[in-house]
Length: 88
Image 1 (cartoon, rainbow, N blue to C red):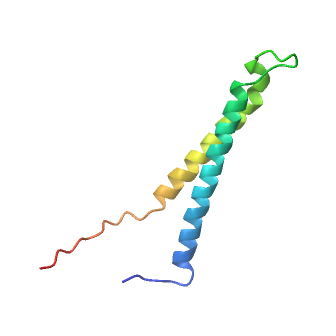
Image 2: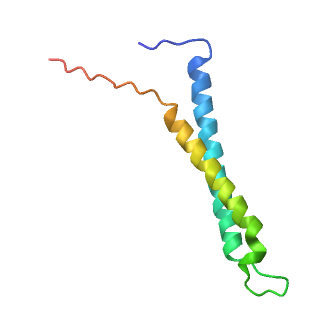
């Protein structure tokens, strides 16, 4: 069956959950910052993307964090192929 170690399976599951939560939050933050960048205006209210470059950098960093978290969550999965036994 399963080889349960003290805290091993629970810790792995908790780490995977944490990676997914952080990845999804980073994705949401990046999307929000990108929207703020695209709608940036200057002090007079005129559309000006140069005034929103901080939002662009925040969106880029959040996208990198989201990609790293999701990739790390997938890499942590074991590469064991499950055997399917066909019975009579």
